[in-house]
Image (cartoon, rainbow, N blue to C red):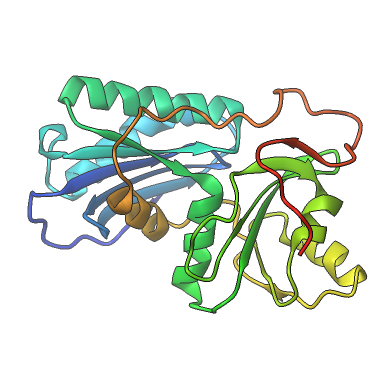
Length: 242
């Protein structure tokens, strides 16, 4: 378990961010976008058992209680079906019990922000997570961070074809997409390929997101992987070649 750094906390605008959608369990306490404590543990399963103790450790390090929180944020995927349900159930519970707003964070957007915080390169960021069997979860973001389309699940070849010249590849599927894009003669740069978003990215998006409708898990394909590689998009908005 990796503790984050502690700074004096002004008990206003305090946010708890939860990420259980990927191969880690993360809990971040932030004052606005400023991280004041964090816990992160790599795991493929067991998020449900690990999450609450991690949250309580983080609150204790920040010297605050649940009642000091002003909002809760949670990653909604795409990602692990079980992990997404764990995080959303916990976040909804906190929201209802504490009577505070809840906001959803897209995993792909969080990965794009992770890369932007690590390297402020001006480029279209093309984020992809391996969805197995020749599929990826993908989404592209303009230079200013605006999403170009909704997250979708598609053939890796389709996503690679949508990467523009000079595009920056981000996310765990970066090696796959880079090989396909380069084989098609495209020049691309390689960004952050971490399996999970950074705690700083989670805090930034949690502070910036509007609390609207209650977030729902972003299920883009059935839990059982589809055996046959599709000819194009499976779900989500269309992505065309650039």
